[in-house]
Amino acid sequence: MSIISFSHVSKQYPGEVTALTDVSIEIGEGELVYLAGPSGAGKSTLLKLIAGIERPSGGLLLVSGQDMRKMNRATLPWLRRKLGLILQQHRLLQDRSVLQNVMLPLLVGGAGEKEAAQRAGIALDRVGLGDKAALLPQVLSGGEQQRVSIARAIVHKPRIILADEPTANLDRASGKLVIDMLQAFNSAGVTCIISTHDERLLQGADRVVQLERGRVTAMREAGSEVGA
Image (cartoon, rainbow, N blue to C red):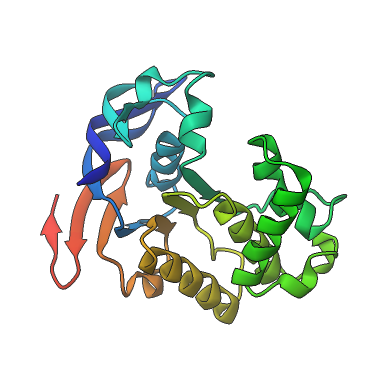
């Protein structure tokens, strides 16, 4: 069963800048899918469309059965509760502790302070940072800050995790740890869509979707390759 469905989706920005052209992809619940391709291929735009940060210019995009062209301020919070978003820039609040950063999605969603703190602590334990909860983000390494952003993304138990180049600014060991964590969440049933330009990270994916200049040029299933 598809949890995300692109049907001939395109995205143009002002100035006749085309980011995606005629993209058709079905992503099943519980899949681990990598978006591969060079910078500017359209990977980030595709993730932003799924997250409701951008809207399609054409075609049909369904996320959990919802038409993303019709999402509005009233319906977007419903979608966001199903998503965990991990960006290259961690966007952690530097004047709040690691625990407080991870609590934020729960507080915004209406959870009480005590419940949010407890669940944030559990999320930090899952990424191996339970002992860093009281620290400010700026004293952590880049890899640790990315793991905090993962804890923040999974604290509300999303059905879908979107990760945009999550290892781009990390050393190889830290990057492997981050990918291992995402694969572990996928093993627990979470749909994971990860963009990367690093071919070394593509092992173990259910599927690799190759993008170039806004078009899907190939789709490689585990153990095979299919031209788009």
